[in-house]
Amino acid sequence: MRSPPVVSVIMAFKDGERFIRDAIDSVLSQSCRSWELLLVDDGSTDRGTVLARECAEKHPELIRYVEHPNHENRGVCVSRNVALRLAIGEYIAFLDVDDIWLPHKLERQLSILTAHPAAEMVYGSSQYWYSWSGNAEDLERDHIPDLGVVEDTLFEPPLLLTLLHPLGRGAAPPPSDVLVRRAAVERVGGFEEQFRGGLTLYEDQAFLAKLYLNSPVFVSSETWDKYRIHADSNVVRQNRSGQGDAGRLFFLDWLESYLRDHAVRDPRIWAVLHRSLRAYGRSVSHSGIDQIDPRAITWWLRLTRGNIASLVFPLADPEAVRVVITEVGKRAAFDVQANLTQFEVKHAHRYSIEYRARADTPRTMSVGLAQAHAPWNGLGLYDQVDLTTAWREYRHELVVTADDKNARIHFDLGDASISVELDSVRLRGPDGQLVEPAIVFQPHYPAERWTPSKQTPNP
Image 1 (cartoon, one colour):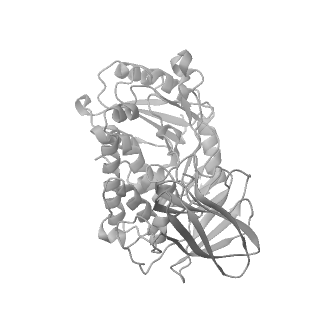
Image 2 (cartoon, one colour; image 1 turned 30 degrees about the horizontal axis):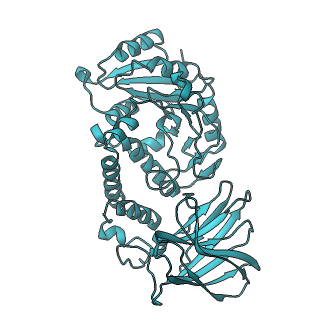
Image 3 (cartoon, helix red, strand yellow; image 1 turned 120 degrees about the horizontal axis):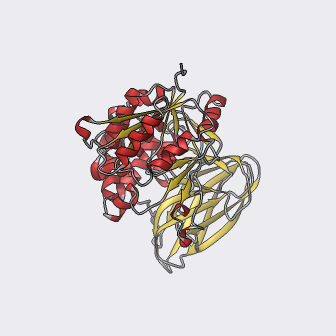
């Protein structure tokens, strides 16, 4: 008699005739043999149903075919939740019908979760797969995108929620790349079933958001799956139809309600949620605003890959910002850079940057005013200052060389692993008045203030 499987693999599909055999074969080819595959037919109208049934009949000890009553279409979230209730394994993996796994996928992910018992989920670097088409123009398009976060690292909750898409700039993992402990999935209640129809572009992100909030996640540099890019994928179809923005706004509204219902008070999350809603002319509710530290809106770090740093906002001084560098991996055009966001400047107008600063030991720091977008052109100033261990006041005068609605004050900390504190940073316009960041509300400091984060996104 076969032992209970360690991993339950869930494949919810609708009309998967074109790719389903490839996906199932990639599971059958796994070097880890302790798995079960649950094929959940979400109302297919093509031969995907026949192919799935045939595979289940051929491998009854490994594969189960499931469908909704009357072969109904109930959406991918409902389908995955049905499979979760049937799953036996200690771990849960998902495989979209148009993706495939590399043979060592489950073996390596189980090894990582065993080596990191605190981790409840693991994902890696998916290969974006164009060459499957066989077209000459696609053969060189395969690539592995930069994850946008430090790899081979265990992230404590809720940090990834602020770093990864849709709130952050890091790449969110596709479902096919994830392995998660079943206990963690059960604790967050599985998938959100209101995400269906034109809103399914973000159903994975709602599920992952709940995990980021509650579970330590290990991010690996390894590649275990091929994420097939094709014109009929859900992502491409919804973006082509213009539903992408509607789906993202639905997700943001859902997240705000979820955070409030679960009494999530972390101001980092409320800050990035507010920034995301602001793109749609919206703001978080008043109760959410109360959780936001203004510094979370106006400050962020830009890190080259291989560097680790953090912004720390000292509780005793609501004006202070501390930049802590814990690892510098390589020298580049910038290494660790603290930026103050959302300043609008005018061509040929005179401005001044004012601030106080100190360092743990003497070091240099570059100060500049530049565009927030590539190619990071300067806007009239890039100066170098010598910092000491004592607080000093600095002032830099400049004439701006171009209009810019989102200029950034840069404090470029280079490759020196020496902590710096910045305080009372201000930009004054031609009339000598303070130029304020584009924050659409006047938040106050709540009693429960900012908790220092380990790192911030690499935009």
